[in-house]
Length: 123
Figure (cartoon, one colour):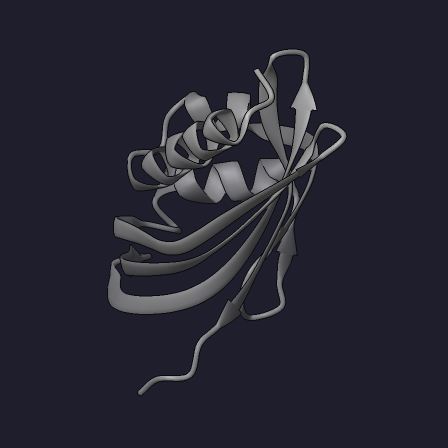
């Protein structure tokens, strides 16, 4: 299934797995992922999954707005605004980010191969 709807569904599964981390992360994220944070840090799949499962990154809630999806030859570019309440390492916080997700079709499944976030200025 290589429709925009299937990409949106994969992105939604990722959003939910970031709030309640589980084995779905392993299925959604490609082994070769380049996962870029808004502070410039770039992580591997093992790092990001470990940090989500351990609670080092703890998303209490995530709202996605302004999402767009573009498809081209088995690759999907997803852009959106992410606003989240966090409790990273037990420290409450709030972030508002612009995010680019790059998904690649692998068989019938979409796998996240790249993510880059930039922090929006506070109002």
